[in-house]
Amino acid sequence: MTAQPNPHYITEEEYRDGEEISTIKHEWLDGQVYAMAGGTFNHATICGNAFAAAKAALRGKACKARSSELRVKIESNGQEVYPDAVIFCPPSRFVGKGDSTLLTPKVIFEVLSESTEKYDRQRKFVLYQTIETLEEYVLIEQDRIWVDHYRRVGEDWLYRSYNERSSILKLQSVAIEIPLDDIYDELELPESLFGFTPSAQPE
Image (cartoon, rainbow, N blue to C red; front, side, top):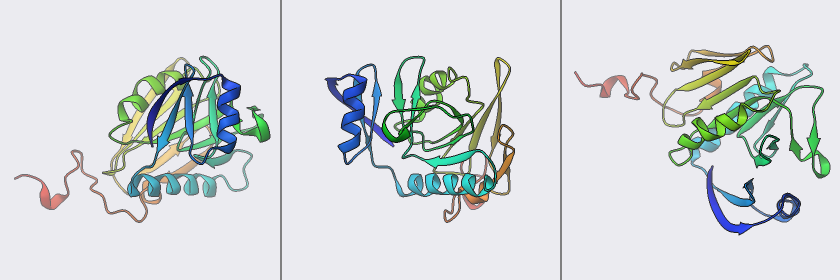
C-alpha cells in the first residue's frame, strides 16, 4: 500500500493509541505518521495469497504466518511498519497492547507497487536488515510473475529471482516451500523476463 505523509509529529505512545481507534492503518517514522492508502486488486489478491500459502505450509509447525494486520517495529530506529505478510518463530517478542507489534520477524513479504517499490527495495530493506531475527525478505511484483528473494547468510544477503509460475519459493529459515502458482492464484500475468506475454514479444 502507498504511504501518505501527515506533517504532524507525535510520540510513539500517541501513535499506538491512535492506531487502536483509527479506521485506517498508519506507519510511524521519525515522529511522523504515514497513512496507508488502499492498494490495487492485484496487490490485495497477492497479499492474501502469500499469507494463505505461508500459513498452509506452516501448519503443524511452531512458526506462524500473519497478514498485514500485524505491525513490526524496527528497534534500530523505532520505525513501525505493516509488512504485507510476515512469519515469526518462537521465542517471539512483542510490544504494545495485545501483542499488537512484533519485534522478531523471521520472514517478511512485501508486494511491490509503483509508488513504494523504491522504498521497499532500498531504505526499507536497509532498515529490515538491522532486525537480528530476520533471515529472509521476499519482494513480489504485482503486474508480472516475478519474485525477488533475499536470504541472510552470515553478514551477507544471497539473492535469487523467480519469474515462472511453475517456480517454487524455498524459505530455508522456516523449512517450507511456496509455489509461485499459489502466490499468483486467480491472476493471469506474464512470466517472461521483460514482462511480455509470448504473443506480445517483438520479433
